[in-house]
Amino acid sequence: MNLKNLADALGVSKTTVSRALNGYPEVNARTRERVLAAARESGYVANPLARSLAVGRTNVFGIIYPLLPSDLGDPMFLSVVGGMSAALEHEGKNLIIAPVSPHKELPAYEQMVRARRVDGLVVGRTRVHDERIAYLARQKFPFVAHGRTESPTPYAWFDYDNEAGMRLACEHLLALGHQRIALISAPLELNFARQRSDSFGSCMRCAGLAADPAHLVDNSLDRRAGYQAMQQLLASSPRPSAVIVDNHLSAVGAVRALLDAGIAIGSEMSVIVWGGIEDSLLGNNLTKIDLPDIDKAGAKLAAMLSAVVGGADPAKVNELWQPVLVPGESVGPCPR
Image (cartoon, rainbow, N blue to C red; front, side, top):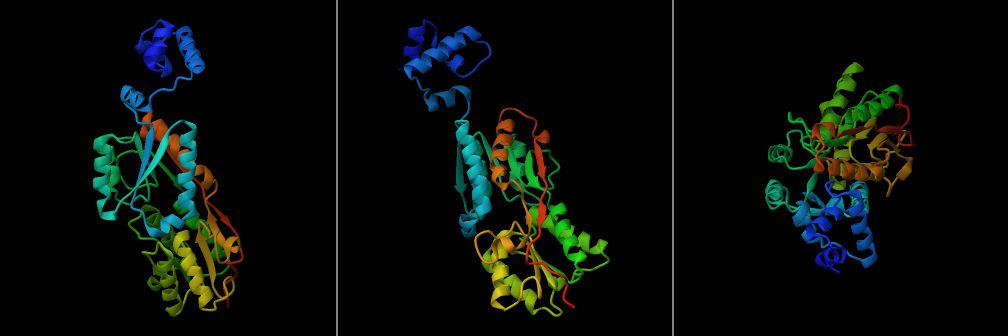
């Protein structure tokens, strides 16, 4: 059964059948019900390519991602992608991930936009000054940023409150008497890392403390970098009594370095991890800045992108979720 056969059986035009199946308002309710009922009875399924050409939509959303080896084992990344995929499948849509080399990322966006291969894009790991977002905004191409930037142009974004989360970590350590607090950061051109670093500095200043430059280590976004960063902190003098690791990927290496050095975590050295480590080492015993409902974040991103694709004002499609501090055994009073 094709569209023409269905139209002939109902005694209406193919245009009327197509519009009824796609929910166009100019088709009256009675005709729409007749068409839908006949389609169900005959087992008619619309040709997706033809439908895409007719309505100007692909029903595909995309993520262009400069994929790092660590991403394949990143439970948070996989959780967000899985949540998006499941939500879109429920709506009869699909999600594609296009891995690219970091230096080829912007050309990949340009190619995707020119070819209109997707209806909208999710932009991940946003940067402080993000040329991808600037490009998509200029092109008026639908997108949602997974994170914020300093772009002056309003855009749709979803994020966790990085400043508030870092305050929770700092205040927790300060209340326990820690003053030599170190920070292991992701590369500071990434907006989340910059926001967390700035919040860390602000918290220390408010406490009347100045962070030791030797206790600030950035460019850490995988296990090896985290391991090396912690080794660097352990070699400093005086070494910190507490360390905040601003991302869960490098936290695995940082904790491993402490264990290999024979440091008693929670007594000799306190550690707070952003996002926690669920798959190894101290696991759920770590004190962490938790991201509640991370399993729902992907579905939220999908819903937000659907809204923007549907014509919603991007400036009004914003979500800021609040992190929480989950106490664990990796933090204790500052040793005397």
